[in-house]
Length: 160
Image (cartoon, rainbow, N blue to C red; front, top):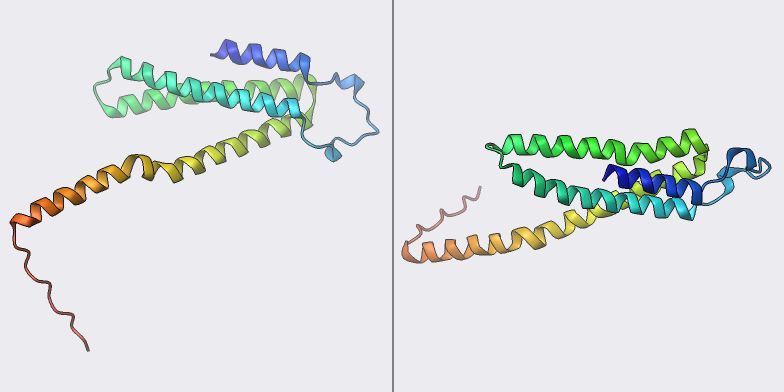
């Protein structure tokens, strides 16, 4: 996966970014809008991350850890290493080699938007997808269990 990140970065360096000596200094980079190729690079990097995360979970399950803590530590460590390389290598290459700070800003901005959108969807759909069935099952079991028992009446509300 790291080789894929390197290959993509090199491809995008040649396709997208201008040579610093050929940049027109009369045009202010701050007045330009986002670089569309940088948007594509950021989306590809995010797709690589989601694919690597899925593969890494499968590999960690194959290790057959004895304790859940070891599984979580191993998963967090490998994802951290991959994230450092996957996100910082392209940014450092763009910033230091090509010196296209508009492209660095674009990549970082798009990664931020994609991550926040993904987290928002996850927070919205997680209860719907995973917890609703379990809550319904608990309610059903509770009703079945309470049919057999007589529940004592609740105390009257004390009014002052």
